[in-house]
Image (cartoon, rainbow, N blue to C red):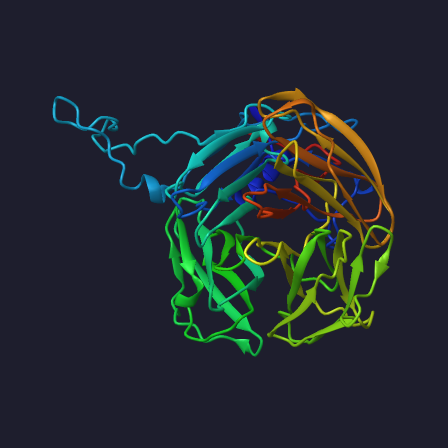
Length: 520
């Protein structure tokens, strides 16, 4: 007679293999707590997808990948973890034409014992070896592929990768940064455009072994735009597909909200926006629709800020517009409110709303009992004349327990921390550098209704780039973003990334009885 143990940890692992993170609920639908005999455990598997960086031959791309060190909770025991691994590899779209070379006997190498060909092995572009130590890799030119990757074991919780591309000239000029994302089935992108002089692509990446089919809906100021694609967009297994927005509709619209959903499978999605006059950058997805949204990290020297919002439900949204600056929250003169009609994209030019002080925008219900969910993003311009550059700030989810931004440099990084409600205290940890340096840690207090813009601590003896991890210690929710500037020929090239909760742990109910079963 033998005993087989049914493990809650195994169930959690199965869930994380599907989604990259998991959570369980108690019968009333609320998330369990320690008081409900619940235990936070690290995820054991997570996925990341990075879009193809650029089509420019002069593009220079750096990937920085990092997993923060996990602090084990009191009383928490490690389980039988999967092997530690965190690697990003080229998507199958690039590897499809690769064939094994024929051997002298006329047979192809790398064949299975039954004679079937094996695909040529693909080497990881970047691979993390241990928590707490970032690694980087570089790729030049316009043929760098999209990347797909998985982290397991101790390298899975909080695994993050930053893709940063510099293009010095041409229509795609700019500093383009994006935090590689996990796969999902639903994405909102307010802030895209079909305007003359803009070329916006939606990049769809499928990490799975089965094909996916995605739908892309476009909404302008008068509602849904008529699409020319009715059967969905196929995204083959393990591949990436860029879709030019003007090929989806004959309608014209300056400001557009893009909605990506999947009929089958999962994808990673991000928009690459290129403006002939203002440069280019990646537009990441907005946080999930919510009644109150926070858009953190408008630079102090922004010369133009445009707000784009969309109400995806059946009700219109009446919103108060507030700016959280270093000393408190104000209402921008002339832009006290915004009305967003259901299913229509609304936009407003806020000009130089920060007036020389870094800040964050907060959109909240004009009537407390009517919190209509919205998504939103900011289009931010720095510089003037021919020396301009753009970046985007989508609505951000809270930092939560912990969040990380990789690829920070000794100069040019700014961390913005916003406490829209209660005051909060956070811990900021600068990792060791990719080529050397010692970790640095500092604690900050963020006053209620303010934005604290700081230069993050720099590791002593830094060589290479480093990661910044933000942890909420006490108080209300904190929303954060990191901006990175690398000026070029007088152009303030910059990019901004949000820091949402990395979902490195999952709450699992603790068993009240032995769940073993007996097998004959």
